[in-house]
Every structure is written in C-alpha cells, then in structure tokens.
Amino acid sequence: MTTYIPDILRREVAERAGFRCEYCRVHQDDRLFAHEIDHIIAEKHGGQTVNENLSLACAECNRFKGSDLCSFDAITETVVTLFHPRRDQWTAHFRVVEGVIEPLTSTGRVTARLLQFNRIDSVDRRRSLMRLGRYPAD
Image (tube, rainbow, N blue to C red; front, side, top):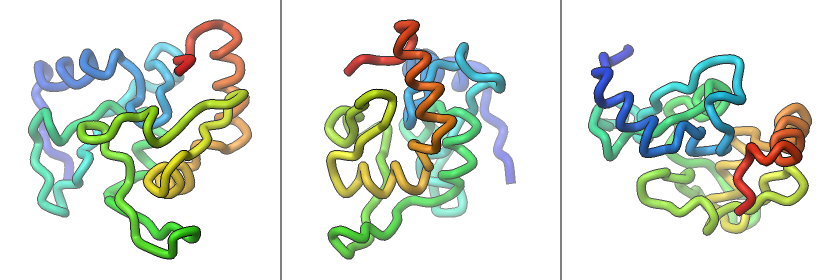
C-alpha cells in the first residue's frame, strides 16, 4: 500500500534532510534515482504519514530497510531498534573512515548491516564523493 504524500510535505522532508539520504548521507544529486520519502515506522506497524515519521532515503537504503524497525545484534545478543532519523543523531551511531561507515553502537551495527551500508560499490562511491568534497566529513 502506498499512501499519498502531499508535495508540500515531500518538500519539507527533503529540505530538512538537506537533500541527503538520512541513512547513508549521500546527496540526492549524487544518485541516479531521486531520493524517496520513507516512513520511519512503516504504516503496517501503525506509523503515520506525518512529518515526524518521515525521512528522506535513497532508493537503496529505502529498499534494504523496507518496513523493518529493528534487528538482532550478534554482539549484544539482543534485538535493537534501527537508527531513527528524527530521534537519533547520526554521528552518535556512525562515523566514516575512508568511505566505510563504521557503526559505533548496537543501533549503528544493526542499521549498517541491514541497510548494507558497506557494500563495495557504496564504499567506492563514498570515497569518490569524499575526494570531490561532496560527502559530509563529520
């Protein structure tokens, strides 16, 4: 089921995100396909189509995330919630080292694994964007 999201709300979400995927941080201009509006908490889990529950996501991150809310962390052997762009600070859960998004927390680990942040093509893309000054340094 796809819910209609008004253009004004889409614009608000994209502008708030600085036109970057709120998961992997790649700018919309640096992707072949336009970024999408993601329900952080999927509608099938009771998430609403309101600004606070929407994020901007590249097509890859949005597909890998799907309707998932959490995943199993093998290190802590617990179920952990995924990174939540409205509640969590990206730099508290991740850092980028030579194009690799390194998780700093259990939330970071499950999100990086589930969203497949560090596939070789993604790392290569980030490295190239970093050389061009088009990927966040923090």
